[in-house]
Amino acid sequence: MQCRTHIAFGIAASTALVHTGDLKVLLTTIAGATIGSIISDLDSYNSEISQILNKITAIIVATVLVSLGISYIFKIDIIDKIVQYKNAANILIGVLVFLLVSILGSYTKHRTFMHSIPCVLMYFVILSTFLSQSFTLPFVVSMVAHIALDLFNHIGVVLFCPISEKRICFDLCDSDGIVNSILFYVSVFIAAYMVTFVV
Ligand SMILES: [Zn+2]
Image (cartoon, rainbow, N blue to C red; front, top):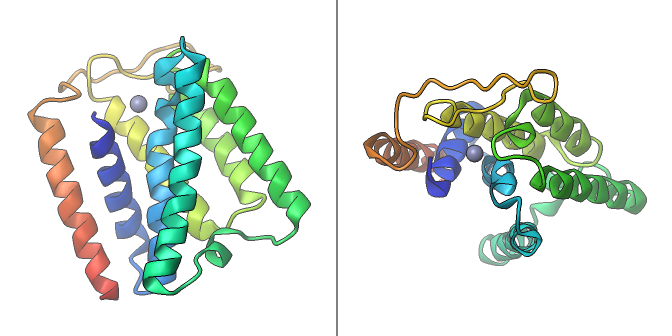
């Protein structure tokens, strides 16, 4: 599926699951869901290190800018909702391990480790050490949603990499065809509906 579809589907699934009327929790959910929905595709340019680093940098810069933008527009600080432990060393180690796994994952073959259940569990453990459940759970839900959508086209994913190399694929639709478009618009509608609970 296209990047925008993964993001919209991840946000729709996460906001529907959290179903909150709290603006801070909603924004934290959207932030976690957005990053979780695209992290798996860091492996899509595994031959070009500059593109990988650009992508990781773009994700970090986008996250910081979105957080600052939200703080400015809504006059609230969502950082205290995202970060669970205020210990600087704890946060620094967590961020470094997160970056290390993401950079190493970028070098793996497309739709193998970065699209696997063991990888989801690894990110869940890493993020849980320094980030709140309000951020971590949407991240994990969106990552699982991304992998689930990728199962439906002809390439499929190595779901249990590195435990098993078996590639699973349902081969039901193209990644940029009519199903992709329908899924995108339905997801946007659901996400918009969930946002109405706080306005
Ligand atoms: Zn993917």
